[in-house]
Length: 140
Ligand code: HEC
Image 1 (cartoon, rainbow, N blue to C red):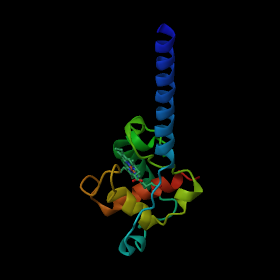
Image 2: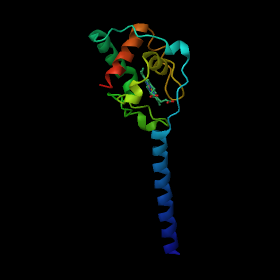
Image 3: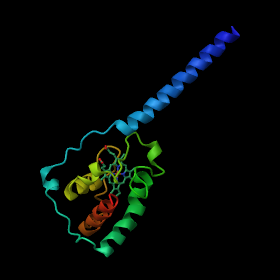
């Protein structure tokens, strides 16, 4: 009887570990494409290349609104990321940096599902583009 109980405990342990690993694996792999309206895709940034003031502004807002989930370097490893069902993305990758400025704008401020809408928190266009410019730096 005792050995059987041990076996059952052992098997449940294995199942638990398996489920846990699968759940983490799913978080990283579950990347569904964004459906971005043409209007947003065509948008152009108002930040000029190398505008230090805009980058400083972007950095400040990144720390305030985005870092908790996305991490300080945009790797998707912020303190809140472990609680998310969806991986927030790795902004240092070429795949991310291939998005146009307008696409990044849409994903950042309109959002979807676990990515919150920030249109009411980051209201000025110049602040929004400063954040986009800051995310661009993460690929370099
Ligand atoms: C509560 C956690 C959370 C916060 C805060 C947050 N994000 Fe996100 N973000 C996510 C998640 C989760 C996703 C993935 C959503 C999806 O794919 O459905 C995401 C996706 C994104 C993407 C698209 C990434 C890709 O490769 O598909 C961008 C861009 C983005 N966030 C920018 C921002 C910006 C800018 C801020 C701050 C203004 C911010 N996020 C704040 C959780 C967060």
